[in-house]
Length: 380
Image (cartoon, rainbow, N blue to C red; front, side):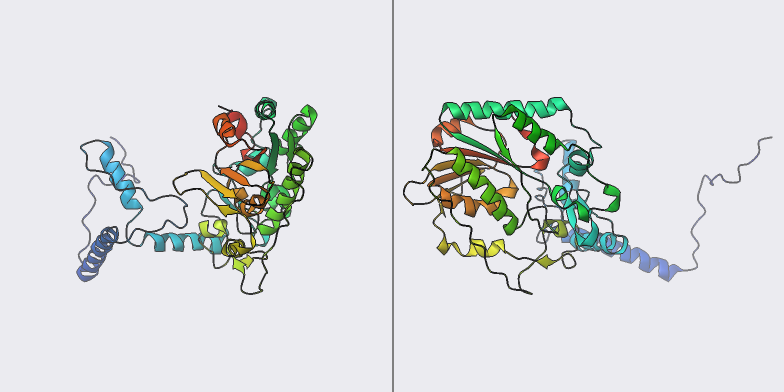
């Protein structure tokens, strides 16, 4: 005779007790109202996805396909009523109560410092701790690609400068969590710089920068340091007299208690009111006061991926700058030194663009986590 399992569930659940009919009815009604409000909320003004830094999923066109229900679900999930409020409550609870980042690519460090872990959330492990090793062949491939770019540009009489911006954790490791430990003895950046120096063909510069505690980017003071390093190399690489003087970076005034900042990382963790810091050189003031600068933006809004600035001072050189978001505060500084400066949001050098623009110098700016990008996106 089989022995009954005391832990086995009944094949048919017992009926719910009917002793609290009013309570059960109110719970059911409240649940239905919450569902209805969530659905109706999707018809209101779409949210801004302030924590996610991405575009809203568009409503799909009606179609009798298997993919259509999933597309509707994803679009609805971006819009249902109360979404932003629920996310804000979740993010603040994770951050404030548990000290855990709700954003997978943001690390909460010590002293209220926030670190960006890269688009794949692996930059710290790859470029600092060394737990995701980069092979010597990958470093060699980058050197080969940069050398090809330098040789192509040299054949046209164009100088080439590579500027690598270190990550925040490379410059400020003391604010990382204790578990992050010391960096690997030879980081990929150190290995790449050593390989470039040994090759002697490409001149790459990496210097200490000053960063926001709550942002993934350097602040205006840090950008000014980088600007000085880059422009000294540009002046050295150009023919003598081509750039007689480097434009002096003018820093905006700081007003204590007024100029405060909460960066992109603070917004991603949903606690910008907590992660606030003094902004000692507000970039917004630089943009808001163009009167003291020679350079003006001259491209049309249709030039996707390009920004073009011109300065009418006689005798200035021309430049093409391949850049990422770290160069945003560099743009008003660099542009003062060139009669025409074309900023390209791309990692792949385009020979057709170079021949068309005929620059005197090409500046290749990249953040540390992108140092393998040139090999992955070779010159066309």
